Length: 103
Length: 103
DNA sequence: CAGTATCCAAAGGGATACTG
DNA sequence: CAGTATCCCTTTGGATACTG
Image (cartoon, rainbow over all chains, first blue to last red; front, side):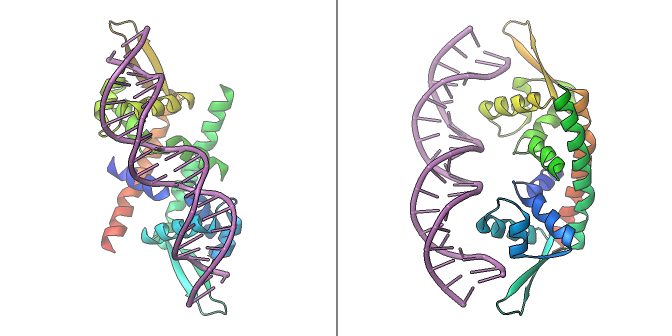
């Protein structure tokens, strides 16, 4: 019961899954790349969400010594285990949409 | 991608899963019962969340001709398919907690 | 580039009281 | 009992500007 809420807390909000999907799809991704991938998100929100994902050890943040500096985000091994969850939720979402449309 | 968000929208918020779990556990459940089961929820919130779940065809609302009237909530067949999702999320939540605690 | 800081409007949601 | 209505504080998050 608590555990479900833990999961939901981690994935909660409007952007988390889109961000994870972006990083996941490209393997590694920079801040401004994700900002472009996730349509509608502001830099403030992206910054906040990335921090939360990092605290939850789903992603790793690495500062690269470029000029100007760039930052690379990757999924951790633990973060990658979310793939299954996301697939489950995707399948259920598709079924759900059918049920709603069929009224 | 959209489908994941559909699922998340349906399960989103602080209370949905707790409410579903309450109804699921008892099979059928009245408004005031759920109000007691879900610690901390207000009647306003419960009312709102139940409406959303009903619109999404996860639960069925039935008014009983008692005096005073009571209302029974049950999971639809479609609502019951959430069990798998919830179990997945639970398992992942447990694993996740381990990862966080181990730091 | 990768953020942080500030301002501010809108939404969320608790507490309480009320209704059929 | 099963909600609705109202008040009102808190949180959210967009827009914009700024910094190392």
